[in-house]
Image (cartoon, rainbow, N blue to C red; front, side):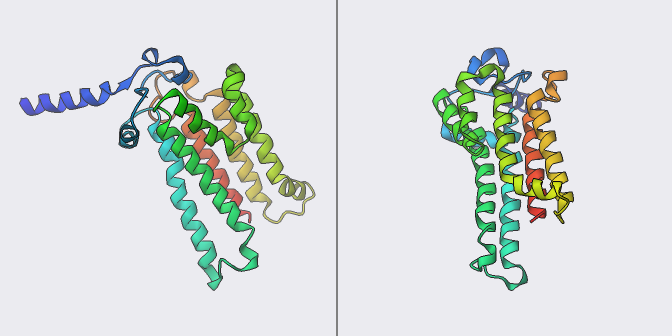
Length: 234
């Protein structure tokens, strides 16, 4: 009997470390996410410990941290295959591409891990995260809060379009051998944008996807899958 009581009390303690939306300062609230919030002003150690706790940010961290392992492994494989040296001229353009991919995933993971330490650190974390997109995304956090998600997504789309414009032009001219990968890449990115802007699926069932399955997790997953297709096209 005492063992059962201990297990229940441990579960209660774990649940109590997370807050409901009405208990959170308005700056920390996310649309249609009702539960699973980490306590504001968390310590560095407490933030790291939250990696193994079921909060509404836990999978936001892991959905961009785990792909880092894949992309590091893939970059090593590309440089070691066919007995090629990473110092050969042919591989120079690929190096910053892999570095950029790994850095934007890492920035996102760090931002979601430490964003509850304070309001100041929250803004710093997401400034670093959004800087991987562009400056206008950072500005939208303060000055266009009502349409911030749309502005940040638009900034991401413009930036992405610019960097993939050579491939898009070749695709339009029918001269891109790997066009199937470009189609797949943009399909994943369009799914990511749709989930992020329209808050799918939590908008249709508030509170049901707080821990697993809310739009930001799908946003991360679709971005990573799109990046994989980008690499496949090279």
